[in-house]
Length: 540
Image 1: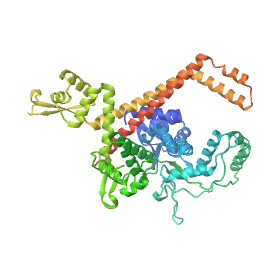
Image 2: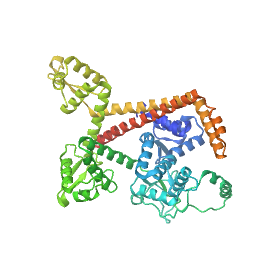
Image 3: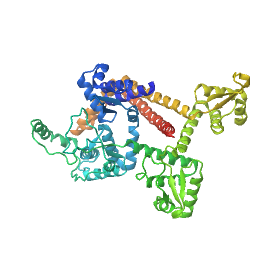
Image 4: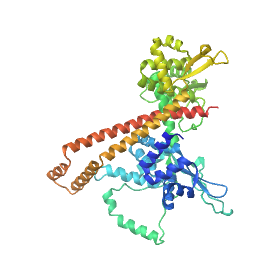
Protein backbone atom coordinates (compact mmCIF):
# COMPACT_ATOMS: atom_id res chain seq x y z
CA UNK A 1 0.00 0.00 0.00
CA UNK A 2 1.46 3.33 -1.09
CA UNK A 3 1.73 6.42 1.10
CA UNK A 4 -0.74 8.25 -1.19
CA UNK A 5 -3.38 5.52 -0.64
CA UNK A 6 -2.77 5.52 3.13
CA UNK A 7 -3.10 9.31 3.30
CA UNK A 8 -6.31 9.28 1.24
CA UNK A 9 -7.84 6.48 3.34
CA UNK A 10 -7.05 8.39 6.54
CA UNK A 11 -8.66 11.57 5.19
CA UNK A 12 -11.79 9.69 4.08
CA UNK A 13 -12.18 7.98 7.47
CA UNK A 14 -11.65 11.25 9.35
CA UNK A 15 -14.12 13.18 7.20
CA UNK A 16 -16.90 10.58 7.41
CA UNK A 17 -16.43 8.96 10.84
CA UNK A 18 -14.28 11.24 13.01
CA UNK A 19 -10.84 11.14 14.61
CA UNK A 20 -11.25 8.01 16.80
CA UNK A 21 -12.40 5.78 13.94
CA UNK A 22 -9.67 7.28 11.72
CA UNK A 23 -7.01 6.45 14.30
CA UNK A 24 -8.16 2.81 14.59
CA UNK A 25 -8.51 2.41 10.79
CA UNK A 26 -5.12 4.01 10.16
CA UNK A 27 -3.47 1.64 12.65
CA UNK A 28 -4.97 -1.39 10.86
CA UNK A 29 -3.95 -0.08 7.43
CA UNK A 30 -0.36 0.50 8.53
CA UNK A 31 0.23 -2.71 10.46
CA UNK A 32 -2.10 -5.27 8.86
CA UNK A 33 -4.32 -7.77 10.75
CA UNK A 34 -4.17 -7.25 14.53
CA UNK A 35 -6.06 -8.44 17.62
CA UNK A 36 -7.92 -6.01 19.86
CA UNK A 37 -5.21 -5.98 22.55
CA UNK A 38 -2.50 -4.74 20.15
CA UNK A 39 -4.90 -2.21 18.62
CA UNK A 40 -5.54 -0.66 22.03
CA UNK A 41 -1.80 -0.42 22.70
CA UNK A 42 -0.98 1.03 19.28
CA UNK A 43 -3.71 3.70 19.21
CA UNK A 44 -3.47 4.74 22.87
CA UNK A 45 -7.29 4.79 23.10
CA UNK A 46 -9.50 3.22 25.73
CA UNK A 47 -10.61 -0.37 25.01
CA UNK A 48 -14.25 0.75 24.90
CA UNK A 49 -13.43 3.43 22.29
CA UNK A 50 -11.57 0.92 20.11
CA UNK A 51 -14.48 -1.56 20.33
CA UNK A 52 -16.99 1.10 19.28
CA UNK A 53 -14.74 2.23 16.42
CA UNK A 54 -14.42 -1.39 15.22
CA UNK A 55 -18.22 -1.76 15.40
CA UNK A 56 -18.62 1.28 13.13
CA UNK A 57 -16.01 0.01 10.66
CA UNK A 58 -17.50 -3.51 10.55
CA UNK A 59 -21.01 -2.06 10.16
CA UNK A 60 -19.85 -0.26 7.00
CA UNK A 61 -17.88 -3.29 5.67
CA UNK A 62 -14.59 -1.39 5.99
CA UNK A 63 -13.06 -3.93 8.38
CA UNK A 64 -13.39 -7.71 8.41
CA UNK A 65 -12.52 -10.11 11.20
CA UNK A 66 -11.22 -13.65 11.24
CA UNK A 67 -11.03 -16.23 14.03
CA UNK A 68 -7.53 -17.66 14.35
CA UNK A 69 -6.85 -21.38 15.07
CA UNK A 70 -6.05 -20.59 18.70
CA UNK A 71 -9.38 -18.80 19.16
CA UNK A 72 -8.25 -15.16 19.04
CA UNK A 73 -9.90 -12.70 16.64
CA UNK A 74 -7.88 -10.52 14.27
CA UNK A 75 -9.23 -7.45 12.51
CA UNK A 76 -8.14 -6.33 9.06
CA UNK A 77 -8.97 -3.09 7.23
CA UNK A 78 -9.81 -3.22 3.51
CA UNK A 79 -8.10 -0.28 1.81
CA UNK A 80 -9.95 -0.89 -1.47
CA UNK A 81 -13.31 -0.72 0.31
CA UNK A 82 -12.33 2.46 2.17
CA UNK A 83 -11.37 4.14 -1.11
CA UNK A 84 -14.88 3.34 -2.42
CA UNK A 85 -16.21 6.03 -0.04
CA UNK A 86 -14.90 8.49 -2.60
CA UNK A 87 -17.41 7.05 -5.11
CA UNK A 88 -20.50 7.34 -2.88
CA UNK A 89 -21.86 10.47 -4.65
CA UNK A 90 -21.61 8.63 -7.98
CA UNK A 91 -23.52 5.61 -6.63
CA UNK A 92 -26.27 7.89 -5.30
CA UNK A 93 -26.52 9.90 -8.52
CA UNK A 94 -26.73 6.70 -10.59
CA UNK A 95 -29.56 5.40 -8.39
CA UNK A 96 -31.39 8.73 -8.86
CA UNK A 97 -30.93 8.55 -12.64
CA UNK A 98 -32.26 4.98 -12.84
CA UNK A 99 -34.93 4.92 -10.11
CA UNK A 100 -35.76 8.52 -9.24
CA UNK A 101 -35.87 10.13 -5.80
CA UNK A 102 -36.90 6.97 -3.84
CA UNK A 103 -33.98 5.02 -5.37
CA UNK A 104 -31.57 7.84 -4.59
CA UNK A 105 -32.59 8.07 -0.93
CA UNK A 106 -32.68 4.29 -0.45
CA UNK A 107 -29.09 3.94 -1.66
CA UNK A 108 -28.07 6.99 0.38
CA UNK A 109 -29.60 5.54 3.58
CA UNK A 110 -27.92 2.16 3.04
CA UNK A 111 -24.55 3.82 2.43
CA UNK A 112 -25.05 6.12 5.41
CA UNK A 113 -25.86 3.30 7.85
CA UNK A 114 -23.82 0.46 6.31
CA UNK A 115 -26.80 -1.91 6.29
CA UNK A 116 -30.48 -1.69 7.24
CA UNK A 117 -33.61 -3.89 7.28
CA UNK A 118 -36.04 -3.22 4.44
CA UNK A 119 -38.81 -1.99 6.75
CA UNK A 120 -36.48 0.53 8.42
CA UNK A 121 -35.05 1.82 5.14
CA UNK A 122 -38.52 2.25 3.58
CA UNK A 123 -39.82 4.13 6.63
CA UNK A 124 -36.81 6.48 6.71
CA UNK A 125 -37.04 7.27 2.98
CA UNK A 126 -40.83 7.81 3.13
CA UNK A 127 -40.35 10.28 6.01
CA UNK A 128 -37.62 12.18 4.13
CA UNK A 129 -39.71 12.39 0.94
CA UNK A 130 -42.76 13.55 2.92
CA UNK A 131 -40.65 16.38 4.40
CA UNK A 132 -40.03 17.75 0.89
CA UNK A 133 -43.69 17.59 -0.18
CA UNK A 134 -46.33 20.25 0.14
CA UNK A 135 -48.49 20.37 3.28
CA UNK A 136 -51.20 17.75 3.17
CA UNK A 137 -49.28 15.36 0.90
CA UNK A 138 -47.41 12.29 2.10
CA UNK A 139 -45.32 9.52 0.55
CA UNK A 140 -46.85 6.06 0.72
CA UNK A 141 -44.72 3.13 1.92
CA UNK A 142 -45.84 0.96 -1.03
CA UNK A 143 -44.23 3.29 -3.58
CA UNK A 144 -40.88 3.27 -1.76
CA UNK A 145 -41.00 -0.52 -1.20
CA UNK A 146 -41.67 -1.11 -4.92
CA UNK A 147 -38.49 0.86 -5.71
CA UNK A 148 -36.65 -1.24 -3.11
CA UNK A 149 -37.82 -4.42 -4.89
CA UNK A 150 -36.66 -3.06 -8.26
CA UNK A 151 -33.21 -2.29 -6.83
CA UNK A 152 -32.98 -5.85 -5.49
CA UNK A 153 -34.24 -7.37 -8.76
CA UNK A 154 -31.49 -5.57 -10.70
CA UNK A 155 -28.93 -6.58 -8.03
CA UNK A 156 -28.00 -3.02 -7.01
CA UNK A 157 -28.69 -4.00 -3.40
CA UNK A 158 -28.20 -7.40 -1.75
CA UNK A 159 -28.70 -9.19 1.52
CA UNK A 160 -25.97 -9.09 4.15
CA UNK A 161 -24.38 -12.33 5.37
CA UNK A 162 -25.96 -13.67 8.56
CA UNK A 163 -25.08 -16.26 11.19
CA UNK A 164 -26.23 -19.59 9.71
CA UNK A 165 -28.65 -21.64 11.78
CA UNK A 166 -26.94 -24.63 13.33
CA UNK A 167 -28.78 -27.98 13.55
CA UNK A 168 -30.61 -28.48 16.83
CA UNK A 169 -28.96 -31.83 17.37
CA UNK A 170 -25.45 -30.38 17.11
CA UNK A 171 -23.89 -29.07 20.28
CA UNK A 172 -23.20 -25.35 20.04
CA UNK A 173 -19.54 -24.68 20.70
CA UNK A 174 -18.62 -21.29 22.11
CA UNK A 175 -17.08 -19.04 19.43
CA UNK A 176 -15.19 -15.82 20.00
CA UNK A 177 -16.76 -14.42 16.79
CA UNK A 178 -19.61 -15.72 14.59
CA UNK A 179 -18.97 -16.89 11.02
CA UNK A 180 -21.33 -15.08 8.62
CA UNK A 181 -22.67 -16.58 5.40
CA UNK A 182 -25.42 -16.03 2.84
CA UNK A 183 -26.87 -18.39 0.26
CA UNK A 184 -26.38 -17.05 -3.28
CA UNK A 185 -29.91 -17.98 -4.34
CA UNK A 186 -31.36 -15.90 -1.46
CA UNK A 187 -29.06 -12.90 -1.94
CA UNK A 188 -31.56 -10.85 -3.97
CA UNK A 189 -34.88 -12.28 -2.73
CA UNK A 190 -36.99 -9.61 -1.02
CA UNK A 191 -39.13 -10.90 1.88
CA UNK A 192 -42.88 -10.58 1.45
CA UNK A 193 -43.84 -7.68 3.70
CA UNK A 194 -47.10 -5.80 3.92
CA UNK A 195 -45.66 -2.37 4.64
CA UNK A 196 -48.68 -0.15 5.16
CA UNK A 197 -48.28 3.46 6.16
CA UNK A 198 -47.29 6.93 5.08
CA UNK A 199 -44.29 9.14 5.70
CA UNK A 200 -44.39 11.42 8.74
CA UNK A 201 -43.24 15.00 9.03
CA UNK A 202 -40.76 15.99 11.70
CA UNK A 203 -43.12 18.24 13.65
CA UNK A 204 -45.74 15.47 13.76
CA UNK A 205 -43.08 13.03 14.93
CA UNK A 206 -42.29 15.27 17.88
CA UNK A 207 -45.74 14.58 19.31
CA UNK A 208 -45.00 10.87 19.35
CA UNK A 209 -41.68 11.21 21.19
CA UNK A 210 -43.33 10.66 24.56
CA UNK A 211 -44.76 7.35 23.37
CA UNK A 212 -41.37 6.32 22.03
CA UNK A 213 -39.71 7.12 25.36
CA UNK A 214 -42.30 4.96 27.10
CA UNK A 215 -41.59 2.10 24.71
CA UNK A 216 -37.84 2.38 25.34
CA UNK A 217 -38.46 2.38 29.08
CA UNK A 218 -40.57 -0.78 28.75
CA UNK A 219 -37.73 -2.46 26.81
CA UNK A 220 -35.23 -1.51 29.50
CA UNK A 221 -37.56 -2.87 32.16
CA UNK A 222 -37.79 -6.19 30.32
CA UNK A 223 -41.12 -5.60 28.62
CA UNK A 224 -41.60 -7.45 25.31
CA UNK A 225 -42.23 -5.50 22.11
CA UNK A 226 -43.25 -6.81 18.73
CA UNK A 227 -40.27 -7.39 16.40
CA UNK A 228 -40.43 -6.06 12.82
CA UNK A 229 -41.52 -8.65 10.20
CA UNK A 230 -38.08 -8.70 8.53
CA UNK A 231 -36.08 -8.82 11.77
CA UNK A 232 -32.58 -10.18 11.13
CA UNK A 233 -32.65 -9.62 7.33
CA UNK A 234 -30.30 -6.74 6.53
CA UNK A 235 -29.53 -5.18 3.16
CA UNK A 236 -26.44 -3.44 1.79
CA UNK A 237 -25.43 -1.74 -1.47
CA UNK A 238 -23.84 -4.05 -4.05
CA UNK A 239 -20.90 -1.90 -5.14
CA UNK A 240 -19.72 -4.44 -7.75
CA UNK A 241 -23.06 -4.13 -9.55
CA UNK A 242 -22.65 -0.35 -9.69
CA UNK A 243 -19.12 -0.84 -11.06
CA UNK A 244 -20.52 -3.15 -13.72
CA UNK A 245 -22.98 -0.40 -14.68
CA UNK A 246 -20.18 2.20 -14.84
CA UNK A 247 -18.15 -0.18 -17.00
CA UNK A 248 -21.10 -0.72 -19.33
CA UNK A 249 -21.58 3.04 -19.62
CA UNK A 250 -17.88 3.44 -20.48
CA UNK A 251 -18.19 0.79 -23.21
CA UNK A 252 -21.29 2.48 -24.63
CA UNK A 253 -19.51 5.86 -24.66
CA UNK A 254 -16.47 4.29 -26.37
CA UNK A 255 -18.66 2.78 -29.10
CA UNK A 256 -20.46 6.12 -29.56
CA UNK A 257 -17.17 8.01 -30.01
CA UNK A 258 -15.73 5.35 -32.32
CA UNK A 259 -18.82 4.81 -34.50
CA UNK A 260 -22.10 6.63 -33.94
CA UNK A 261 -25.02 6.99 -31.54
CA UNK A 262 -27.06 4.16 -33.07
CA UNK A 263 -24.21 1.66 -32.63
CA UNK A 264 -23.89 2.67 -28.99
CA UNK A 265 -27.64 2.19 -28.49
CA UNK A 266 -27.40 -1.33 -29.94
CA UNK A 267 -24.62 -2.18 -27.47
CA UNK A 268 -26.58 -0.53 -24.61
CA UNK A 269 -29.62 -2.68 -25.47
CA UNK A 270 -27.53 -5.88 -25.45
CA UNK A 271 -25.99 -5.00 -22.09
CA UNK A 272 -29.37 -4.09 -20.59
CA UNK A 273 -30.97 -7.36 -21.77
CA UNK A 274 -28.34 -9.49 -20.03
CA UNK A 275 -27.21 -7.31 -17.10
CA UNK A 276 -28.76 -9.57 -14.44
CA UNK A 277 -28.46 -12.98 -16.13
CA UNK A 278 -24.74 -12.59 -16.77
CA UNK A 279 -22.40 -13.22 -13.84
CA UNK A 280 -19.89 -10.49 -13.03
CA UNK A 281 -16.98 -12.82 -13.82
CA UNK A 282 -18.39 -14.21 -17.08
CA UNK A 283 -16.38 -13.89 -20.28
CA UNK A 284 -19.34 -12.49 -22.22
CA UNK A 285 -23.05 -11.83 -21.94
CA UNK A 286 -25.69 -14.44 -22.68
CA UNK A 287 -25.96 -15.02 -26.47
CA UNK A 288 -28.69 -12.86 -27.99
CA UNK A 289 -30.18 -13.31 -31.45
CA UNK A 290 -30.56 -10.32 -33.72
CA UNK A 291 -34.35 -10.86 -33.60
CA UNK A 292 -34.32 -10.51 -29.78
CA UNK A 293 -32.14 -7.39 -30.00
CA UNK A 294 -34.46 -5.90 -32.64
CA UNK A 295 -37.53 -6.41 -30.45
CA UNK A 296 -35.78 -4.85 -27.42
CA UNK A 297 -34.53 -1.68 -29.12
CA UNK A 298 -35.99 1.57 -27.70
CA UNK A 299 -39.06 2.83 -29.51
CA UNK A 300 -37.28 6.05 -30.49
CA UNK A 301 -34.86 4.19 -32.80
CA UNK A 302 -36.86 3.43 -35.94
CA UNK A 303 -34.31 1.29 -37.75
CA UNK A 304 -35.18 -1.75 -39.79
CA UNK A 305 -34.06 -5.31 -39.19
CA UNK A 306 -31.68 -5.16 -42.15
CA UNK A 307 -30.01 -1.98 -40.86
CA UNK A 308 -29.64 -3.56 -37.39
CA UNK A 309 -27.92 -6.60 -38.94
CA UNK A 310 -25.47 -4.27 -40.71
CA UNK A 311 -24.68 -2.49 -37.43
CA UNK A 312 -24.16 -5.82 -35.64
CA UNK A 313 -21.85 -6.98 -38.44
CA UNK A 314 -19.82 -3.75 -38.16
CA UNK A 315 -19.54 -4.14 -34.38
CA UNK A 316 -18.49 -7.78 -34.71
CA UNK A 317 -15.79 -6.89 -37.27
CA UNK A 318 -14.40 -3.97 -35.23
CA UNK A 319 -10.84 -4.58 -33.91
CA UNK A 320 -11.89 -3.65 -30.35
CA UNK A 321 -14.29 -6.64 -30.34
CA UNK A 322 -16.96 -5.11 -28.14
CA UNK A 323 -19.43 -7.49 -29.80
CA UNK A 324 -18.72 -11.04 -30.97
CA UNK A 325 -20.72 -13.37 -33.21
CA UNK A 326 -21.25 -16.87 -31.85
CA UNK A 327 -23.66 -18.42 -34.37
CA UNK A 328 -26.10 -17.90 -37.25
CA UNK A 329 -29.33 -19.11 -35.66
CA UNK A 330 -32.16 -16.62 -35.22
CA UNK A 331 -30.65 -14.21 -37.72
CA UNK A 332 -27.25 -14.42 -36.05
CA UNK A 333 -26.40 -14.88 -32.38
CA UNK A 334 -24.29 -12.14 -30.77
CA UNK A 335 -22.59 -11.66 -27.44
CA UNK A 336 -21.29 -8.49 -25.85
CA UNK A 337 -18.04 -8.68 -23.92
CA UNK A 338 -18.83 -7.20 -20.54
CA UNK A 339 -16.72 -8.39 -17.65
CA UNK A 340 -14.24 -11.08 -18.59
CA UNK A 341 -10.59 -10.54 -17.63
CA UNK A 342 -9.50 -11.89 -21.05
CA UNK A 343 -12.11 -10.61 -23.50
CA UNK A 344 -12.84 -7.30 -21.81
CA UNK A 345 -9.14 -6.62 -21.63
CA UNK A 346 -9.02 -5.19 -25.16
CA UNK A 347 -11.83 -2.75 -24.39
CA UNK A 348 -10.23 -1.69 -21.11
CA UNK A 349 -6.82 -1.25 -22.76
CA UNK A 350 -8.51 1.04 -25.29
CA UNK A 351 -10.14 3.10 -22.51
CA UNK A 352 -6.91 3.26 -20.47
CA UNK A 353 -4.73 4.29 -23.44
CA UNK A 354 -7.27 6.97 -24.39
CA UNK A 355 -7.01 8.30 -20.81
CA UNK A 356 -3.19 8.27 -20.98
CA UNK A 357 -3.22 10.07 -24.35
CA UNK A 358 -5.56 12.74 -22.97
CA UNK A 359 -3.31 13.33 -19.93
CA UNK A 360 -0.18 13.57 -22.14
CA UNK A 361 -1.89 16.07 -24.44
CA UNK A 362 -3.07 18.23 -21.53
CA UNK A 363 0.34 18.29 -19.82
CA UNK A 364 2.78 18.36 -22.76
CA UNK A 365 0.78 19.49 -25.80
CA UNK A 366 -0.47 17.95 -29.02
CA UNK A 367 3.00 17.19 -30.44
CA UNK A 368 3.93 15.07 -27.43
CA UNK A 369 0.57 13.31 -27.73
CA UNK A 370 1.41 12.55 -31.37
CA UNK A 371 4.71 10.92 -30.34
CA UNK A 372 2.95 9.03 -27.52
CA UNK A 373 0.30 7.63 -29.90
CA UNK A 374 3.03 6.71 -32.37
CA UNK A 375 4.89 4.71 -29.71
CA UNK A 376 1.66 2.99 -28.67
CA UNK A 377 1.05 1.93 -32.26
CA UNK A 378 4.61 0.99 -33.29
CA UNK A 379 5.60 -0.44 -29.85
CA UNK A 380 9.41 0.20 -30.15
CA UNK A 381 11.14 3.04 -32.01
CA UNK A 382 14.56 4.66 -32.07
CA UNK A 383 14.83 8.41 -31.68
CA UNK A 384 15.55 8.90 -35.41
CA UNK A 385 12.48 6.84 -36.31
CA UNK A 386 10.34 8.91 -33.97
CA UNK A 387 11.52 12.09 -35.67
CA UNK A 388 10.75 10.71 -39.14
CA UNK A 389 7.37 9.13 -38.39
CA UNK A 390 6.08 12.04 -36.28
CA UNK A 391 7.53 14.64 -38.71
CA UNK A 392 8.96 16.70 -35.84
CA UNK A 393 12.42 18.37 -35.89
CA UNK A 394 15.17 16.38 -34.14
CA UNK A 395 15.75 18.92 -31.35
CA UNK A 396 12.05 19.17 -30.43
CA UNK A 397 11.50 15.39 -30.65
CA UNK A 398 14.49 14.75 -28.38
CA UNK A 399 13.27 17.31 -25.83
CA UNK A 400 9.72 15.87 -25.82
CA UNK A 401 10.93 12.29 -25.46
CA UNK A 402 13.16 13.20 -22.51
CA UNK A 403 10.35 15.13 -20.82
CA UNK A 404 8.01 12.13 -21.06
CA UNK A 405 10.86 9.83 -20.00
CA UNK A 406 11.47 11.92 -16.87
CA UNK A 407 7.75 11.66 -16.01
CA UNK A 408 7.82 7.84 -16.46
CA UNK A 409 5.24 7.99 -19.25
CA UNK A 410 7.80 6.58 -21.73
CA UNK A 411 10.52 4.01 -21.01
CA UNK A 412 13.88 3.40 -22.71
CA UNK A 413 14.98 -0.12 -23.59
CA UNK A 414 18.62 -0.97 -24.38
CA UNK A 415 19.41 -3.75 -26.88
CA UNK A 416 23.21 -4.29 -27.03
CA UNK A 417 24.88 -5.78 -30.10
CA UNK A 418 27.86 -6.93 -28.03
CA UNK A 419 28.21 -8.18 -24.43
CA UNK A 420 30.16 -5.10 -23.32
CA UNK A 421 27.08 -2.81 -23.73
CA UNK A 422 29.13 -0.17 -25.55
CA UNK A 423 26.91 2.84 -26.35
CA UNK A 424 28.10 2.94 -29.97
CA UNK A 425 27.02 -0.69 -30.43
CA UNK A 426 23.66 -0.49 -28.61
CA UNK A 427 20.16 0.19 -29.88
CA UNK A 428 18.13 2.58 -27.70
CA UNK A 429 14.41 1.99 -28.24
CA UNK A 430 11.63 4.12 -26.79
CA UNK A 431 8.43 2.33 -25.77
CA UNK A 432 5.31 2.82 -23.67
CA UNK A 433 4.71 0.43 -20.76
CA UNK A 434 0.96 1.01 -20.41
CA UNK A 435 0.73 -0.93 -17.15
CA UNK A 436 3.54 1.01 -15.44
CA UNK A 437 2.20 4.33 -16.73
CA UNK A 438 -1.30 3.47 -15.48
CA UNK A 439 0.02 2.60 -12.01
CA UNK A 440 2.00 5.83 -11.85
CA UNK A 441 -1.01 7.93 -12.91
CA UNK A 442 -3.28 6.09 -10.46
CA UNK A 443 -0.83 6.97 -7.68
CA UNK A 444 -0.96 10.63 -8.79
CA UNK A 445 -4.76 10.53 -8.88
CA UNK A 446 -4.86 9.36 -5.24
CA UNK A 447 -2.46 12.17 -4.38
CA UNK A 448 -4.62 14.72 -6.22
CA UNK A 449 -7.82 13.67 -4.43
CA UNK A 450 -6.07 13.87 -1.04
CA UNK A 451 -4.83 17.39 -1.90
CA UNK A 452 -8.35 18.42 -2.95
CA UNK A 453 -9.82 17.11 0.31
CA UNK A 454 -7.22 18.95 2.39
CA UNK A 455 -7.88 22.13 0.44
CA UNK A 456 -11.63 21.86 1.10
CA UNK A 457 -10.99 21.32 4.83
CA UNK A 458 -8.70 24.38 4.84
CA UNK A 459 -11.38 26.52 3.16
CA UNK A 460 -13.97 25.41 5.73
CA UNK A 461 -11.62 26.09 8.67
CA UNK A 462 -10.73 29.56 7.40
CA UNK A 463 -14.42 30.51 7.16
CA UNK A 464 -15.67 28.59 10.20
CA UNK A 465 -16.92 31.66 12.10
CA UNK A 466 -18.83 32.98 9.08
CA UNK A 467 -20.41 29.58 8.39
CA UNK A 468 -21.60 29.26 11.99
CA UNK A 469 -23.11 32.76 11.82
CA UNK A 470 -24.89 31.91 8.55
CA UNK A 471 -26.33 28.72 10.07
CA UNK A 472 -27.60 30.63 13.13
CA UNK A 473 -29.32 33.22 10.90
CA UNK A 474 -30.92 30.51 8.77
CA UNK A 475 -32.21 28.74 11.89
CA UNK A 476 -33.72 32.00 13.22
CA UNK A 477 -35.37 32.67 9.84
CA UNK A 478 -36.82 29.16 9.69
CA UNK A 479 -38.33 29.42 13.18
CA UNK A 480 -39.76 32.90 12.43
CA UNK A 481 -41.31 31.70 9.16
CA UNK A 482 -42.89 28.75 11.00
CA UNK A 483 -44.50 31.16 13.51
CA UNK A 484 -45.76 33.47 10.72
CA UNK A 485 -43.46 36.49 11.20
CA UNK A 486 -43.88 39.61 9.06
CA UNK A 487 -41.69 40.35 6.03
CA UNK A 488 -40.09 43.38 7.75
CA UNK A 489 -38.96 41.23 10.67
CA UNK A 490 -37.51 38.61 8.30
CA UNK A 491 -35.67 41.29 6.36
CA UNK A 492 -34.20 42.69 9.56
CA UNK A 493 -32.82 39.24 10.50
CA UNK A 494 -31.41 38.74 6.99
CA UNK A 495 -29.46 41.99 7.33
CA UNK A 496 -27.48 40.46 10.19
CA UNK A 497 -25.19 39.14 7.44
CA UNK A 498 -23.52 42.11 5.76
CA UNK A 499 -22.86 42.50 2.04
CA UNK A 500 -19.13 41.62 2.17
CA UNK A 501 -19.92 38.56 4.33
CA UNK A 502 -22.56 37.43 1.84
CA UNK A 503 -20.07 37.82 -1.00
CA UNK A 504 -17.49 35.83 0.99
CA UNK A 505 -20.04 33.03 1.49
CA UNK A 506 -20.76 32.93 -2.26
CA UNK A 507 -17.03 32.69 -3.01
CA UNK A 508 -16.65 29.87 -0.47
CA UNK A 509 -19.63 28.00 -1.96
CA UNK A 510 -18.20 28.39 -5.47
CA UNK A 511 -14.77 27.11 -4.39
CA UNK A 512 -16.18 24.11 -2.51
CA UNK A 513 -18.42 23.16 -5.45
CA UNK A 514 -15.43 23.38 -7.77
CA UNK A 515 -13.38 21.12 -5.48
CA UNK A 516 -16.23 18.58 -5.27
CA UNK A 517 -16.59 18.52 -9.06
CA UNK A 518 -12.84 18.01 -9.41
CA UNK A 519 -12.96 15.06 -6.98
CA UNK A 520 -15.67 13.40 -9.06
CA UNK A 521 -13.74 13.93 -12.30
CA UNK A 522 -10.56 12.45 -10.83
CA UNK A 523 -12.57 9.49 -9.52
CA UNK A 524 -13.76 8.73 -13.08
CA UNK A 525 -10.11 8.48 -14.14
CA UNK A 526 -9.35 6.33 -11.08
CA UNK A 527 -12.16 3.94 -12.05
CA UNK A 528 -10.85 3.45 -15.61
CA UNK A 529 -7.25 2.91 -14.44
CA UNK A 530 -8.25 0.55 -11.60
CA UNK A 531 -10.43 -1.52 -13.96
CA UNK A 532 -7.58 -1.79 -16.46
CA UNK A 533 -5.00 -2.79 -13.81
CA UNK A 534 -7.37 -5.34 -12.24
CA UNK A 535 -8.12 -6.85 -15.67
CA UNK A 536 -4.41 -7.05 -16.55
CA UNK A 537 -3.36 -8.67 -13.28
CA UNK A 538 -6.12 -11.30 -13.58
CA UNK A 539 -5.10 -12.32 -17.09
CA UNK A 540 -3.75 -15.89 -17.23
